[in-house]
Image (cartoon, rainbow, N blue to C red):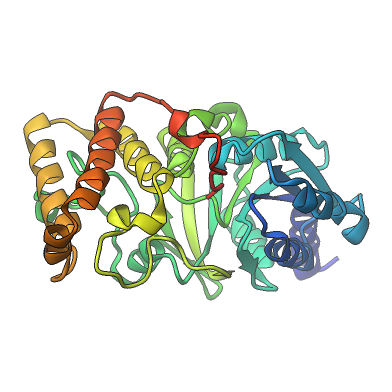
Length: 356
């Protein structure tokens, strides 16, 4: 048997042992079907779909996916209520890892459509990196700004000391290096943390890393999960040639008068959990309370209050509305700095919280 044939067989075995996991909520069946079909077309051996407490009509459509694609290829885990991205992916990872056939787990948001060769590229890179179970790879999402900056500007995706949402007056002097890997026309960049969407890792690594922390509920639970990988001695690499397309834009994208945290249409849940959880993460890198407070103040003033030239005027025209939004931000900051995992905001009787 030739070396090339042996390598192809090894890569094919890796694909067949990959179990993709996606979590959905609300009414997004059409998106989920595309993601499942895309993952299977890439060569994934199985897909676990987590139904994150959807309404009965949507749940019926999701429960039909095994019959649609084959019960040996797709399974559905239904949660009784929306547990957020943290609870949803925790359940999905646990289900995928419990399958004896699973080697790797590939996490996909329910709007991440993989390119036809996305998984083949990951399997090849992993083999070229000596097939180490402590190496995790991440598919590139062109619409994700942190990934764009990593590839185009070598800007690390990591926690800066004493930073607030990545902002630090010390950043010009805080030199952090990014390792590069290139072989056979493929390129990767090192990361300290990554999002769920496109994350591909060996299930054996869960023995050290553990499962996603459900206390985070929503946002930055993926960064906590992946930081535990790298803090435990593992590696994470962003792979430029394995690509995913985001079928829907992020709520933080787009042009508006106000910063996303202040936009009423984003509700209470998204800004609250985004702020609180990022602060909880960044606390592990705070060494100077004074510098941290300075970074927090400057970020809120420059990046949020004065996000656009028209933002200040909007505050003056709508003082009551803006006061309420800033009260929400204040609560999120206080809860984050106290590491208070109070998730009661996520479960008011009339609100169905998002999964991601």
